[in-house]
Amino acid sequence: MTEGPAVDPVALPEVDEIVVTTIVDNTYDALLASVEGVSRPSAGAGRSAARQFAGGETLAGLRAEHGYSAFVTVRSGSASNTLLFDTGASPDGLAVNAERLGIDVSGLQGVVLSHGHCDHAGGFDGLARLRGRSGLPLTVHPAVWTRRRLNLPGGQGLELPTLSRGALEREGFEVIERRQPSLLAGGILITGEVDRVTEFENGMPPAHQAWDGDGWRHDPTVIDDQALVVKVRGRGLVIVTGCGHAGVVNIIRHAMRLTGVSTLLALIGGFHLSGPAFEPVIDPTVAALTALAPELIVPGHCTGWRAQHALAAALPNAWVQTSVGTTYTLSAARPVNA
Image (cartoon, rainbow, N blue to C red; front, side, top):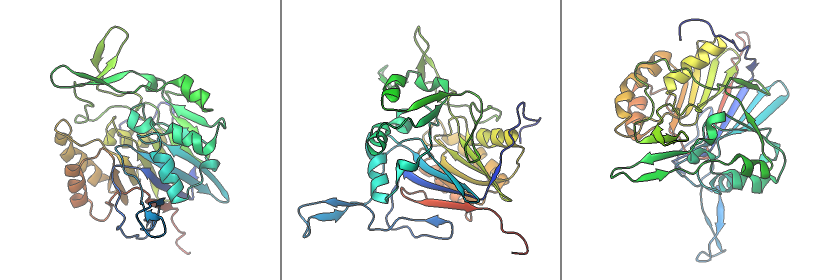
C-alpha cells in the first residue's frame, strides 16, 4: 500500500456479490469452458441471417474489437445496482453483443468512462439505440474531452476522435464531471484521478500527444484514467480497469489507500502492457501483482500477449483467459459455521 492515510478516506460499503460481464474486448473464443465463478456464453450465442444456409441463419458468435466495455452488477441483500463501464470502440459493437447475449440494458442506472480514448467511448450510438433518450447519468473525468493524437513516424499525426459533451447530452446522457473519487449507488467506487507513485509506471510514450490550446504536447499521464472498485464482504477489493493508463499497480495502491482495504480479490480489464514502450514494465508489474496474490486476474484489451504469458505463468491459479461474453461472479465469504 501507499504510505500514509488517505486525505479523504472512503467508507466503502461491503457488497454481497459483484457480477462483471465483458461486453467488448479484443478477444472472443467460443470454445472456452465455464468453471466455478467464470461463466462462458453458449457456442450458439448470437444468431444472424445468412441466406447461404438452410433455414436462412448462422451462428454469428460475438464481436471482438480493439476496445473495452463491462456490464457490472452489485448485489447487497435483495438490492442490486447495475452500470456500464466503458462502451467499446465501434458504434454498434456494444449493442450487437448485448443483444446476442440477451443482456437487457433498460435497467442500467449509469455509465462510467474510464477515460476519453475512442476505443472506450465509441459505443454510445448503439447504447442510445437500445435505450432511447432516458437521461442516463454518465460519470466522467473533466479531461475526458481532451484532444489527443498519435505522432506517427515521419511526422504524420493521427488525431483521435474527441468526445463531444453536447452530442452526448443530445442523446439523453446526463454528464457528471468529477476529478475526485465518486461513491455511486450500491457501493461502487470510481477512483477519480489516480496517484502515480511507482517508479516503473511512467505512462504513455512521447508519440501520445494532447492539444494544450497552443500546440501538441506529450501527454504521458492520460490524467482522466480512472477505475471501478467494489469491496466484497469478507474477501477484499474487486477492481475493473479500462486501459490502466495510470498503471495497474498505481491503481491498486490508490484504491487500497482510499478504502483502507489491503486485500485484492480480483483485477479485471486492460493493463496496457503491450508494445515496445511498455514491455519493460511487465516484469515489475507481474512481481507486484504476484505479491498481492489476487484470487482472480483477467487481463484483457491492451494487456498484450507477452504480459498475458507472464501473468499466466506467475499466477496460474488466478489467471483466466479473457473473452467477450464471459461473466465473472465474486460472492461474499461464507460464515465459518455455514
